[in-house]
Image: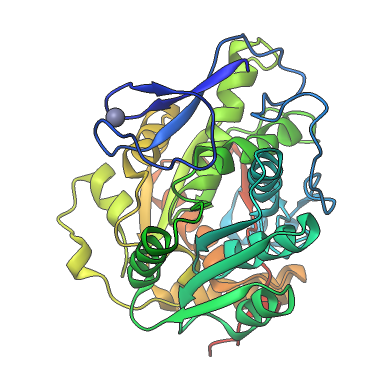
Length: 364
Ligand SMILES: [Zn+2]
């Protein structure tokens, strides 16, 4: 193996495994630490050469210009990377492919995951393709389309009353009771390793030197993965500059924005939001999210549900893009970042459109 797992908090190192999720010294989370330098041609992954890759055709999502929206916002260059054009309809599939493939190579046949919906749907699909049994814990309030996806892929759906955190707590308890591997896409370091590929796709795209990436952030796997991918490209001198990453959260659930801006906010302040995909009151990788934004020179903003829903309608009517409300929050955030001057109107911007609108009822 050319890598090991390293605790983010105490630096303790262990041999690679998908089955241990926390550091046995300090209970911290792991990151993948490679022993060799990045070549800059493709993302380093924890998969052994020759290992079977469980793939449903994820990645290489379309990149398009949003001319009308750019005009509306008064900016020169706005790109949308259509992440919802993915096997299960959200950006999660790249991370899932790497996580499930690694687990398969380790002989995992049954596992536990928790999710607000999209990641659960993604892991359920890849588990089906790999011949594994998945137990997926989701809030009972998750969008019906996401619950249908989880069910039809044959996963065992555990719908949990209460906020998103309740589903995570129930999953951890089930793991403790049953002794099953916990392939949490938020806690496992393998998931965000798979997300690095998006940075390579952008570097090889029509917008290789894009200056700003504005994305909705809940647990932050896309932010952490995309930032790590760009860091690999920079260290390999495959690109000359990296974009600033700006995190957008919902006003009703904004732990990362609060940590970055110094706003007073705590998990008990969380309220329901239409942006269910980022309604995470205690993100386990909060420190990594904050570091990714700050290190890139980006900022964090929070947006209200009304403006998020307005942007969901605008994207549909102006651009023909039907995204979920969570994805539209990024555009509401972009508007704020332009107004504050964090993003200049002559600078180029890319927004990943993270999830399909087809999975959830449209709120009016
Ligand atoms: Zn530790």
